[in-house]
Length: 119
Image 1 (cartoon, helix red, strand yellow):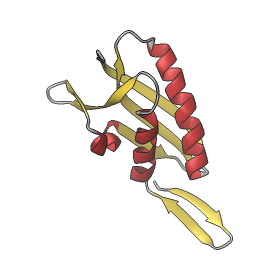
Image 2 (tube, one colour; image 1 turned 180 degrees about the vertical axis):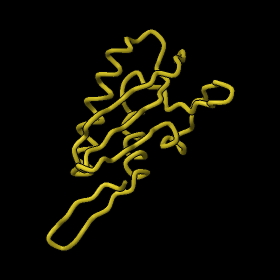
Image 3 (cartoon, helix red, strand yellow; image 1 turned 120 degrees about the vertical axis):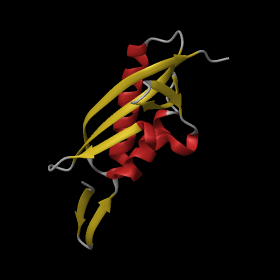
Image 4 (cartoon, one colour; image 1 turned 30 degrees about the vertical axis):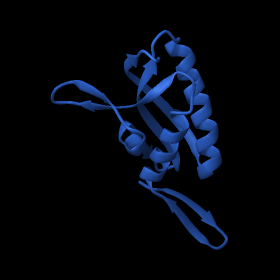
């Protein structure tokens, strides 16, 4: 379902891919996030996505009350607290996506698919 807002001039519809792309760009700016991950269900392999494909590691769902649920599949930096990185990611994405879309975030789920050493 697309996000929807009613204004005095008409309706605004926001596609899930737009929200996913924006959320992905916000996420990779967060401390400790190396990037988005793509999981191959058949082989169980995890692949770090390039910046052009960030929306593939993110799932966005807009419910009937026009609230957003976002699932992130991320790779984090080695040696940094997963809890700290997750809290930072949730707070930052919640604030910026709500400001960007004008819609409320209902849930943010984070799936840590791997860690990577950063040089």
